[in-house]
Amino acid sequence: MKLIILIVALLGIDQWTKELVARSMSEGDTIGILNDFFHVTYVKNHGVAFGMFQGEIKVISIVAIIAILGIIYFMIKQLKPHEIISKYAYAFILSGAIGNMIDRIYRGFVVDFADFRGIWKFVFNMADVWINIGVFLLILEVIVLERKKRQLKKKN
Image (cartoon, rainbow, N blue to C red; front, side, top):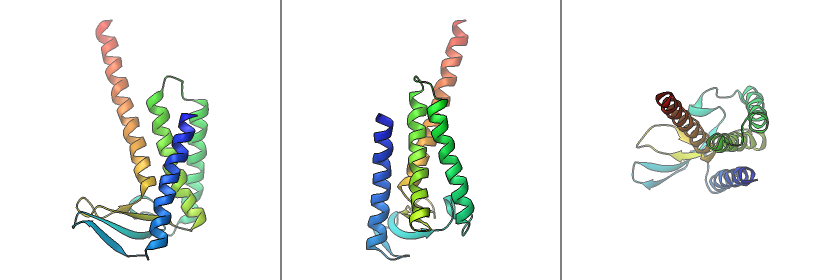
C-alpha cells in the first residue's frame, strides 16, 4: 500500500508541475531562477531522454507501455518481501515512466522544463528525476548486496 501511495504522489507532483508550465508558459519561454545556472524553460519533447528519437512517438509509446507492464509484473511476481530498496527503486521508475506516458497520450509530447544550464544543455521534468532516483537506488542496492556477499565470504 505504501508503494501505491508513493507512486500516486510522484505521479501527482509530475503532472502538476507539467500542467503548471504548460498552462502558464509558451513553448520556448524561459524564466531565470538562479542566474545562468537554473531556468524553467518550456520544451515540447517529441522523443525520449536527451532528445533522442524525436518524432517517433508511436514507437516510443509502444516500448514504454511494454516497459511499464514489465515493471508492474516484475514488482508483483518477482520481488521478494525483503527487497525493500528494489521495491522503492521500481516504484520511482514506474512513476516516471507512467508520468511521461501520460504526456505522450494526453498531449502527444512530453513537457520538459527543468533547465540546469550550469550543468548541461538538456531540459527534463520530474518524471525523469523519478526514473533517475530509481536507477540510483538500484545501483545502491547492488553495492549493498555485493558488500554483504563479501562479508559473508570473509566469515566462511
